[in-house]
Image (cartoon, rainbow, N blue to C red; front, side, top):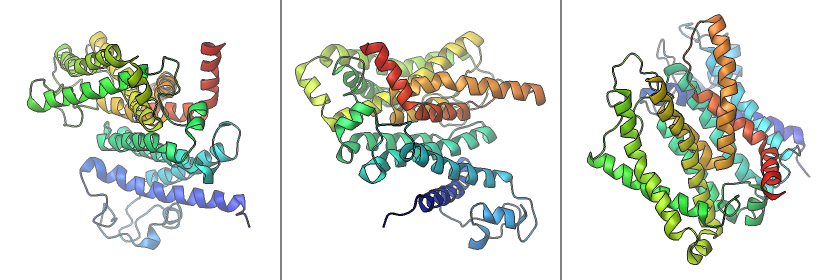
Length: 387
């Protein structure tokens, strides 16, 4: 007999809350360089280990009256909020994908849809953790971004063995170079060249031939190192941005060279249209586009305002999003994010007189919105390019 829908809904929500409980561990421990596995969870105030019955998502926080059982120290409402938000996210995305017509091409859960759902909730869960850390500490741990990027690359490359490649292409379920608005082989060559250029830049950075930007800040990113605001520190911002441009030059040059040399060669077109290769290169291109739009904004903003604009954590966050949703949706997300940012700035200035804000949460919200509007965005683009 088929499992009733309400049982699925309860299970998905409860599972999401459990993931939210783990995200709370990530949010607290990861930026403090603590193990995510050991020691067991403990009260930060009295260091007493938290028993399993005091660690039930949502329920324990309410039953304990928002206080530690032993020392009565207050427990931050963040724990409850993150668990509830993650549970609602898991349930909402499940309903969106499998119980609405908003994504008409989504395969059934047991016929490959689980891969798209799993990839999406992994990315959004990671973005919840990154956003919470960004709001608290003004930084985005790059390990979170790299993890999401790896998930996007693997899902895009191997998804063709789970979902019909024709469906992936037709409905843009995963990034791929087989479905784009350019000539076949173009995007694949740009992605391959950019990957080679990135390897060259990292090698130059490792050997010291090019220098990291904002080197006195906490080491987190390549080539710059500061995620939070650096106005209080003395930097020659033009010099720092020149260092970042030097890092980017091999990526740009190699990408252009690959397009000119192999972009339309018959052997390359045939090779790059292999479903696995197309998926991998499509995800890589989404990564580079996601990084590129934010990094360009960072460079021009820093040169224009003579202070560091945006952070390299935001660059990697959007790159990770691009690896999962692809280049078109990540560009749309980038232009949607400022609307959330402006609303928050207005609220903060009116009530708290705070002008600077971490931008990671708004980029994450932009990614969520374009996932919901997935079909409308692609239908609109098809009308423009193929009318």
